Image (tube, rainbow, N blue to C red):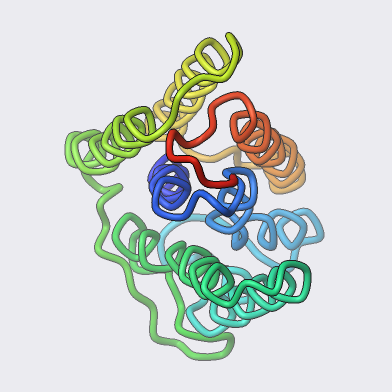
Length: 213
């Protein structure tokens, strides 16, 4: 998934406003931030179907490890146990959503041959309905829970959401960039912009309730 992960970040921000939207985005996309450098150096490959090798970034065991590391770093910085556990769940949600969308190429652990995937991406209409619907659901609930503190909270949010939706549609219709270095570099830049957008919107469009964000 792509916007499905971002939708989890939007929903999580609504559920726990004390954590910045940018931090939520970093959490739900953490597995990809691990994968892109490995893709660049040739350790992992997204060469489709069962030919994909993503055990170090996207396997269940490693995602549990990344989730624990992410949550531990946050706890050390903020001393908020509840928030740390929620971030752990957000990082781990990446594997669960990818199992829904991927073909059978989601591993349990490095060196374990068993792979999983329900293959949502095999159906273009189903992808539009399921992931696209989840994306719109996340946007709708986030908009209801937040208010723009300045004009950028309106224009920045809707333009950013529109660009994310367009990028997702292009990815669904055209597939991933076949050149690994280009795909990894482009992915790091683009996903870093998503996180930056999250931190920007955290200030420009805070949660309506009078709680720190």
